[in-house]
Length: 416
Image 1 (cartoon, rainbow, N blue to C red):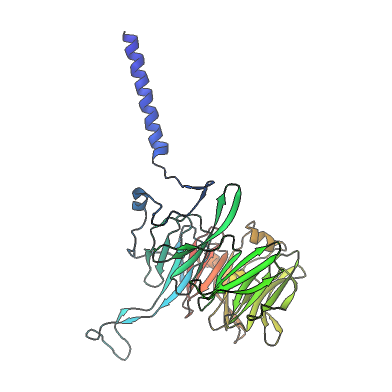
Image 2 (cartoon, one colour):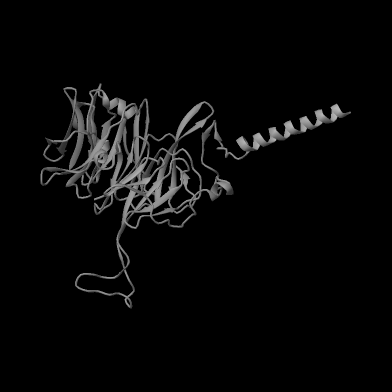
């Protein structure tokens, strides 16, 4: 009898230990529900997170002061976590204080809200949209839906909506989905599946590109989808399309092992006219006014950077060496900001696009009118950090430059 009691007690103890281990290791872990193991968007109205998860995140709509980390003078790391590639910087004018309290002197005017730059981005892990005030250094979470797995985001110029792109798995098939995600947290909508590219112009014109082995088809519309029309149908399939003022430029996908071409596109007929090429490793970045094309290419196994004048059909080689994916034009099309690698290797182009190699960049400004290049900051020297700059964007006043670090997906700002 005593032996039976001892055995029974031992069994009970073992069961208790097993239950305790289960709750310790498994019960508290959140599960990501998706199709085929790939995270997917929740249903409309579903927050996608449990109350416990919400408590561990920043409260919705509540600004947190002292946000960001100053790594070096004027160089701020906004997010330590990876973000979807592509943010937006929106200039916010100052607001005068009410007339009864406004005090104006020869040197100062009392403001209810100083001018600032509102920076919006999407956290890759959660899919939440955040608002970072550049000068006030406040951070606000704008959305409460968990939309994990977003890789890139293309924003409307006013930051009201982002076209978020992610990979969705359905059975054994992979598809690229594009979701129009409002920054105010309201429900969005899906665009056509498997779009090759989604691009937005300065006037909020939306361009979508659909490619197959038979060629490419591009459509343009308003941001809401109205006034939809076909821009072109082309036999070229591996291309990217960029806004160039009121027109467009199409460029073949870059490779250091094959010739590339760039074409201007007639917006009425959809006709392609060659502007550049054949050039190995060709990448392009048209200016906002459409008068110039910044381009990089391989010349005798060395990377070169130049500006092509669309009107005169002349090219000017620049003194710096980088890829156009690491640059951004100013709104006036008079200057260019670029992350310039400290060193290049011959086979870097393809490896860099594939993520097999990275750079450590310095930030430069190229003034086309003054024909000078100015070093703004060397992050490695100033803050002991290696930054491979991609996704560069400016606000309309050239007050703030934002970019991602390709090495780890973190999000950065430089106060110009």
